[in-house]
Length: 225
Image (tube, rainbow, N blue to C red):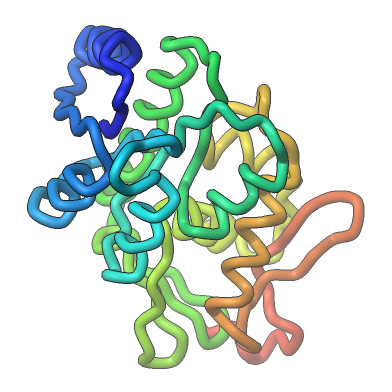
């Protein structure tokens, strides 16, 4: 966890510790970046307003170095533009201050539980030219590896699990993020837009206007058995 306010860091550590989550604290962005690159964390709670290097720059550098450890932003800003910027940089979730420690703990546990569960249920899923491995959490278009954030991968895996079925934005919030309160459907749209940009013209994600998304390709013959 990267948080320069000791009272907040201690409170979050207390709540996470009660749930069996071990916490390591960094008080500035450079220290957080170094630790994230040198150790194998399940998740990073990252304050935006860090000294030395702010949280958005830490996130930017981690993703640029292909470090896809899940990131939850903590920020005092409550502007939609700031939240979307964080998601576009590769963050998986965010909470705005002041927040409930219970809420943050629930979000952290949800992401960790989901990523570990998918690893235990390993299988290859493929639609069209895109395939994913739920154990290694890797994605390919043709034979080209595609780097995805934890949430991007989970959205894609959820859609791939039921090809052709229309999934509402609310269902994605509930089953991928693990909750729907306090999150608008714009969050889902941002992640889907990022997925499409990374997967390119072969992205097998169809928008169902006013409802949600489905995993399918335009030509049914492209769906591989």
